[in-house]
Length: 260
Length: 355
Image (cartoon, rainbow over all chains, first blue to last red; front, side, top):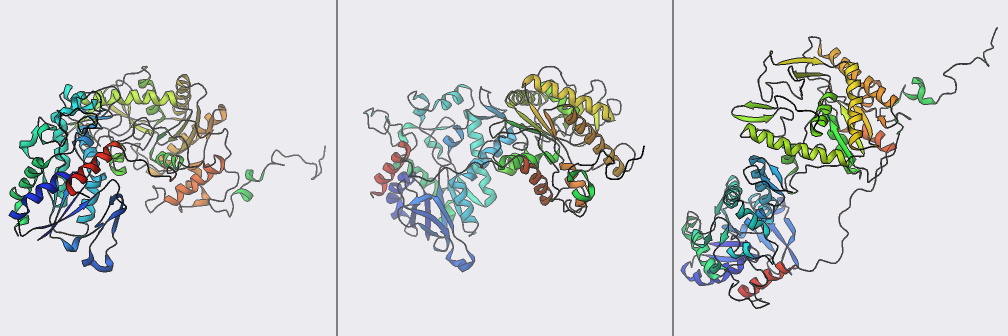
C-alpha cells in the first residue's frame, strides 16, 4: 500500500518516527511531499487516471525541492499534516476578533459565536491545509486523513521577549478552553469532505492549547544565543512526539485504512 | 404690439439639447443620454465615502470600491472570511454593519442613537428562542443567544457608526421605501415588519406608516444637519432605488403604491439637491425606470435590476466622477528574505531528512 504524507517542516518529527516504525509496517510504502522554505517547484496535484479531463492544481505558494507532482493515482491513502493551520493560527486572531463567548478587549471586534466559528472554519479552509484537502478530494474518493498540527510548546506564553502576548491574554481571560473548542470544531468540518481527523495525542498536551515542553525540538534548558529555545522555536516537535502521532494514526480509528 | 417670429422670445430658446426630449431622449439607448448627470462637486480619491441605503446601494458601494474610491468600512469582516459568509453576516455590504437602510427616518434615528440623542425602544425581537436586533435583523441570520448579547452587539455597532461618521467626507445614500412599520409608543421605525424575520406583529404595539413628502423632506434636512455636526463640510449624493415594492400594506394595488413611494422619495431628494450646494442628486432611478430603457434593465420579475442595468447606471456616475487607479497588487520584486520562522522550519527538515 502506497501512502502519501503531505506536510511542511512538521514532517521533521514524522520522518524519524516513521524510520523507526517502518519495519513494523512492511505493507506500507510512504512518499513524503514536503514544503520547503527554499523549494523551487510548486506543488502540483493531479490524477493521471483522469487523463486529459483533469486540470492539475498548481500551488505556487507551496514550494518543493523534489517530487513536486502529487499524482492521486499513485496512492491509496493521503495523510496531510498541519500545513499552516494550527492553534497558533487561530490564537493569533485573538487580539483582533473574538466571539461573544470570550472576554472582550480594546481593539478586538466581537463576533457572534456562530460567526466566530464560521470564521475559524474558513481560516482552516483558506490555509494550505484546506486548499490541499479540497484539491485532493476534488480528484479522488480515496481516504484522506488530516493530522492536526501540534499545539505550541507550553513555555511560549511566558516568553515576554517574543510577540506572543495574545497567549498570555487568552489564558488570563480564561479563553483558552474556548479557543480549543473552536479549533477542534473547525477540524471537525473536514468530515463533511469525508476526511478523517486525528487530533493531537492526549499524552502530549499541556492544558487546553499547549504541548508539553518535553516534546519540543527546542530545549528550554539551552539558553545559548543560537539555541532553538532562544530563537523562539515553539512549534517544532521531536521524534517522541512523532512516534505518538504515528502510533495514533496507525492504531486509532484510522488504523483500519492502512490495513486494507 | 406685434412681435415677428424671429424676434419672439421664449424661455426655452437657447437651452442645451439635454433640455429637450426630442434631442436628449427620443430614440436614444439608455446608456446614450448625453448630459443626464452633471456632478455638483468633486470626490477625491482620499475622501472617505460612507454608503448606506436600500438594496441598490450595495451595487454603488461595490463599484465605487472597484473604481478606487475610498469607501469606508468600520466593521470589516475577518480578512480570511469568504465573501459569501461575510455578506451573510452583513459585512462588507455597506460602510458598517447596519444592514439595509430603507427609510430616511431609519437612517436619521440611527445617527441620533449613535450620537446619543435617541434611545430606541423595542430593539430586541425573538424567534424560536434566539434574539435579533430589530433595527438590523438580517446581520445575524440565526440571531443571538440572549437579549443581553443583542444589546452588547448593538453597542459595538454604534461605536463603529460613530467612528464612521467622524471619518466621512461624502455620504452616498440610496432612498428605498416610504412604507414602514413603527413602534407606536416610541416612534422607532423598523427596517422589516415585526413577525417577518423575527418578533411578532401586535397591532396594539405597532402601526403601519407611509411617509409623506413633507416627512421625508424634513427628515433629510435633519439628517444633513446632524451629519454636518459630526463632519462639517460633509457632502451628500442622494439616489433613489429603482427596485419596486415587493408588497404594499396600504391597501392599493402595488404598482401605484410603488409609483407613489418612489415619487415621494424622488421629489424629496430633488428638493434637497435644489436647496443645498452640498447635496447632489444622481439619477440612477431614471436610468433604470425611465422610458428609454423600457424594461430592458430589469429581470423577469420587473423588480430586480440586471447587471447590465447596474453597469449602465455606474457608467453615468463614472463619466462625472472618474475612475481612479484601483489598488494594484504589490509590484513583483525580489522574493522577500525568509523569516526567522521559515529558516527554523528549514532547519527542522534538514535535521530529519538530511538534505
